[in-house]
Length: 549
Image (cartoon, rainbow, N blue to C red; front, side, top):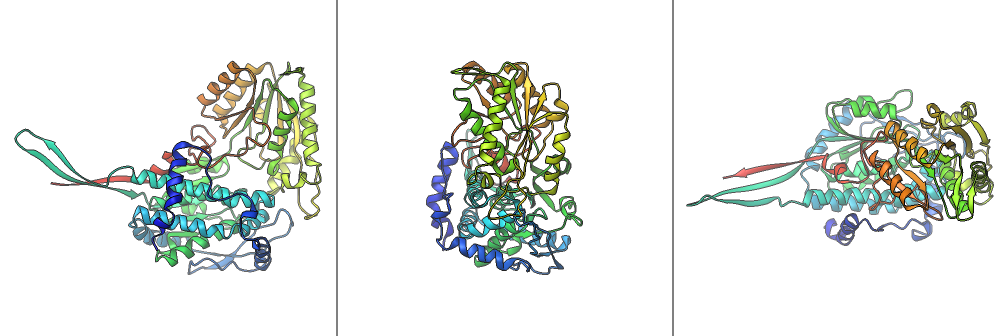
């Protein structure tokens, strides 16, 4: 079967979506659109897998089985073990598979990769529970983030790669008039893959943050080694297994994509990253290791830590604004790269249609909105999810000693379905504008800082300096004054931070849409890459032209 022709309609529509930046999704985000028995089958799948070996991978010559994942909801080890491999074997396999994968036509690669996404669609429930019990995301967030939203981002990378590698003719007769004769040269142009790619996953979004780089490497002809975080292997292991199955069915070397697992005490990431065979590295995680990755003599694509801020100048409905912010800081307990941390409000308060709301009253409304949400028996626990890391849990506890005024303490929230889950509501701490040695740093988790500034212009200046120094993936702003809106946009864009203005209701700063929003600009310290712009693709291959007289 010609897989390119099979998926041609989606390819054409996706190309138009990338260029128009309008809403587009091939994969509905609600479970009801998928197999009716998908949920119960997935629960059985995960239950059977606990305390056993993961044997779906087609890779061979493993040396041992390892694994140390712990469910944030159950607070017990999953007991799942994965095959591990000698680094030199992984490298050799990647080199060999690279030679054949890069020779497959762009159309065939596109068709095969989209077929993989269709296969992954049948595993969305499996991926949801795998993500839930490794990251602490709620079921619905896990389903959406690791299923439809990840597939959308992967498809975006595939289609962007297809566009970039087919935008030029691959063959032409070049004719230059020379007077009495014409100079004729036959020219052939081909895109050539850079080499083996390494994709390093994170513990909180093991699929969503991994598949853009993975599929960007593949569509441009590069083989890939996927190195997941030791605490979140299962979700991406399922993805790699499905990739290998589709490759085998289509006569492709299954080692074109390999899974490389390790443990916290015996890591292999640097061994892989520093190997001369590795030419491309995608990384999501903390800034310290991200800076190391960027220092390597490789082509790197990073998403690191940043400090996201909210500037509140003036609003129509203060309650609606604070409810929106309350949800944004509570969603997955702030364990999102797009979650806001710092909220900047002038000491003179917030202008509304009903008059000025003082700083203290605005603070009180924010805390009430957070409390109303997290204490809601139906919405609280599902919104918060669970805390993924012991480090994050300790950070929440230590935040009360940061020399700020704690106006809302974090507290444990119960989950009737998972009584042992570690769930913590956001803490809110007030700082003076001069305490930037504290609030100018990222405090990953449900930790919210409210900074009292001298004015809105002072808030803008403080945020701009913060973004320039530490980076930011996004910024939110609230104002009903057009001049202020324009000023904020100009100042933030100068330091390459995008702004979400006046979000209320169902629009949240946390969410970035595939085919429309560029996730991370790549222009500040929060990361050097952007999902999924042209540069994210074209740095993975080169054009080579041959000329024939």
